[in-house]
Image (cartoon, rainbow, N blue to C red; front, top):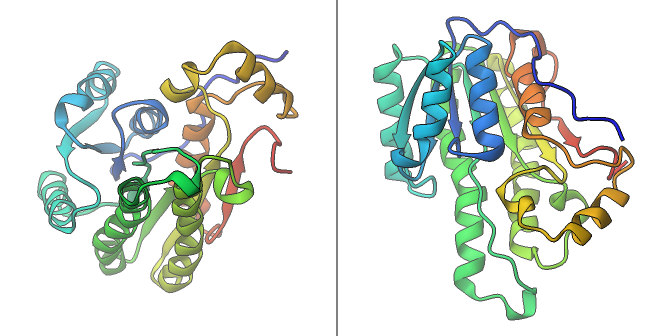
Length: 257
C-alpha cells in the first residue's frame, strides 16, 4: 500500500493574511501550518485561544507568523468582532478565508433531538455564512480574495447517522456556488473542498475493523492525511487559482468517483 504523500505544495503567499476557523486540530491545524509555510500571516480561530496553543507554537517554531482569536462561529457578534480584531492586527486586509470549523452530533434522524440538529447547522452552515459575509465585504472593497469552504463527501453521498451533518455540509456546497457567482466580478474566488475519510482525532477512535472496511471502499486503499487537504486549500488560496471558482473538489481517494 502506498504511503501518504508528504506535504509541501509550493505556493507564495508572502504578504498575505489568512483567516482559518477551526484551526486548533486536525484538518484546520494542517491548513494553518501549510498557509504559514507558504508565507501567509495566519489568524487562527477556535472556540477558545487555549485550544490554539499547539497550532500557534508549531507555526512560530517554524518561523511563521500567527495569532489566535476566540469566537463562537455561530454568533454574529463574535464573528464581526474577530474580523475587526484581525483587520486591526494585520493591517486592515484579509486575502484568504478558510471556513473549516465544524462539529458532529450523530444519530439516526428519527431519534435526533432539535438541539443536535440546530447545533450542527448553526456551527457548520451558519458559521460559514457569517464569516463569508464579514470577510467577503472586505474582499470586495480590496477587489481580491480567496474563500475556501470545507464541506464533506457526506454532503455528496450521504452517511447514515449524519442527517444533520450531511445537510449542513450540503448547504455549504449550495452556498459556495451561489456566492462564487456574486463575488466573481470583484476578483474574489470561492471554492469548496470535500474531504473523504481523513486521519484525525475522530477517525482514530474507530475500531480497526471499521477502519479496514472503510479502506476497502476507497480506491487508493488508505485514509487521507490532513496534509492532503491542506495542500489543495493552499493552492486554492494562491493567486494562481484565479480562474477556479464555484468548484466543489472531493479529496477522498476516489471514493465518490
